[in-house]
Length: 123
Image (cartoon, rainbow, N blue to C red; front, side, top):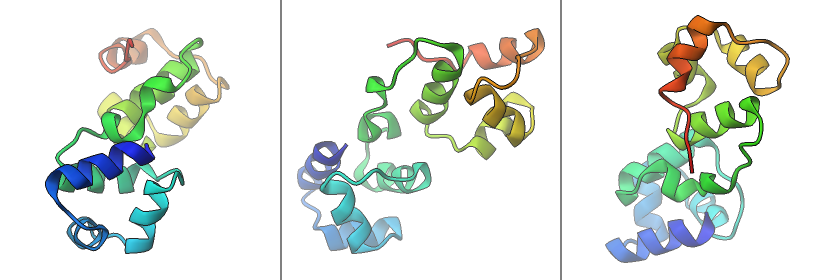
């Protein structure tokens, strides 16, 4: 993620200060991300708009495991740049349900899986 944010910023000729101001985050946050600190999905969404890059490019989500359905659900949510709240609104379930799915603590109904299928990522 660090290199991708840095290169996207450089391609646009932006300083850390410019990116931070346009994304409404601190300069320290941008600097930490460029030095390898993980970023919250909401921060990545802001940076993706400013840097004109999809969230999944900046976040390096292609490296997340997808061996199990819970891993696939988490990866899909992050790939699409969605918080749990955003995702449950799209799927039509509550936020706790998404958390339970991602932790493999709850079974997914066929109806919910049909809605979820459209968001699953195959990399």
